[in-house]
Length: 211
Image (tube, rainbow, N blue to C red; front, side):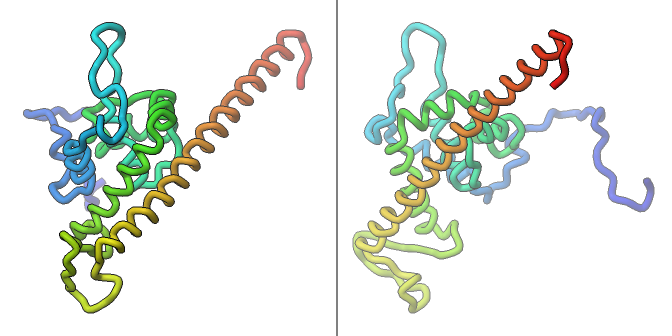
């Protein structure tokens, strides 16, 4: 295919193996998610299982699952099954989780057990991103002082405004978590109906009848 830009051959080897770090740019927002969660006191925020059990099968660290949820919220990934799939194919999530891909039940159980803590954490992350100018509208608020980049009410915030924004973000995230729960429930019910239908069809053919 001459005269076209050609991709790399799928069976082409390399002198040095590729690193996940090479696929995530320095300005990629996923780095902000990683840095933010790493600074949190998860125990104080209400997350359980921060300390691993001495016996039994090792579990996933809550920080990794929280990163998965923050990323899912920012990218509108609206079910635990979708988060599971993305963790196994999305390079950004592979970088974020260290190539861990928990199953959808583990992801859903984490939400059920830590819903309020996830909600508060995501809300504060959204406000932090606004403060750092990572979103479309910048926000700066330090010790109650105002710093105006543009003389507009939308571009300067007091402590009360920041608190209001956090409250609004928490409401939005609460709706997102409810939507996740609904999607998980409906997805599970649909999958179960498909399995039941498959079993009925198999039974019908086994009995010599067609449906």
